[in-house]
Image (cartoon, rainbow, N blue to C red; front, side, top):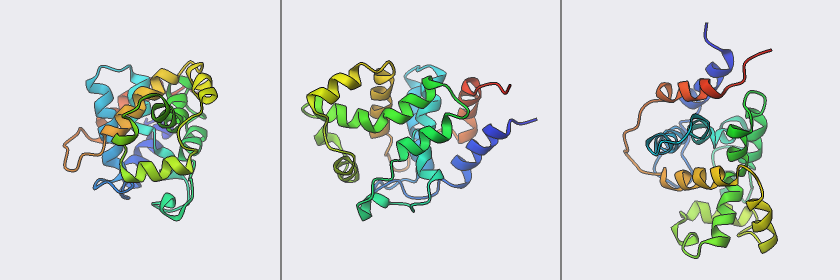
Length: 185
């Protein structure tokens, strides 16, 4: 019998992720799969692979449309996704998801060339998300136990925008998700 929580996640990524990913020429599913595949190919632990697959799940469970940033709205997808996932996963999965936007702000503040690597839609959303971190925010971010995983996830996120890239399907990554899901009870 399939765990209904896993089925819900797989359905979201399979049936509801056809919307365009920002201004990239890929959809939400392709972005999720590319992120997870990058994590798997780098030998990351199952929790980070699962987080990479689900880091933008907040876009799939909110009701703000496909591109709220274009309308000047921060959809706070990292918080929405975190809230959705914390019912079923521990912080090793949920914190990188929650922190992947903060990681972009962190990298813009700490790496002089990072901003130049951002796609136009990432620059627009960065403005809505508060811009690069202040020195105080950088120090606070570094103190979070999952900050390093969030930065790694952010790097996958930025690279996972390749049109036409062949990746394994959603089902390939579900064992990583299953390995991390909390057991009922």
